[in-house]
Image 1 (spheres, rainbow, N blue to C red):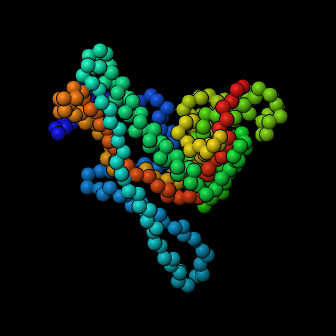
Image 2: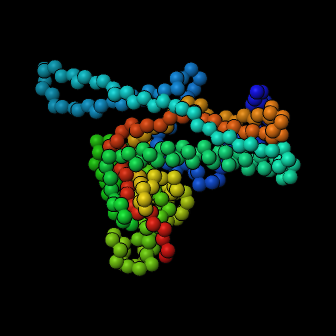
Length: 297
């Protein structure tokens, strides 16, 4: 069966691949953008080996006495890439009954969205796997829990510097975002960690100046995602440094068009990407458990 690559079809590459790179579904890469991402180059293997170095300790010295050397060996973390794909079929008749060029763009958006959502959902399992947890299933999210997670990360041996801490992000479900927004601008009073009256200070504005996809809490990006792991009526939000986990994109998304099966009178579009993901440093992240009950006020 003959396959025609879009690398030789300029119009389809523009209409479909171009559109796929500008997807607007809730596939904004809130989770992926918060983890370390490595991309493959020609000559690289489909397994990425990430060295994990231990810490070293400085000690006091005595003049004239030789220093004692520490042995340093790395613990390798291997992340293997596998294929992920999506395929759609468009009949020739259907393409004649719609605005063909616009429909092809929308097909690219839909396929790119599917790939992005799959990546987000895969990486969300790393958040669900963090050993340390703040918050509680069945309870509303609070700013205190967010602050507790950040404080616990700050107390780690790493990340220790201000520059490293700038790579810490929080990603939460829209319903958890609603919980914390009510503590800054509450409809009532007396909630845990909530002010008795709505706040109008600059810090509240920093957090709530944007609903989607990100605000900031004490300069920590707070991102919203619907792709987090849920369990019953609860959700696994997270707070983590980018080196808590890794995504290895061995091959970028490619699109192929197959119109060789003339009896089907259709075109098949196939988009494939090759990637893997894995945890690097469990202590660099905190799972943040809250309920995921739809708010009514």
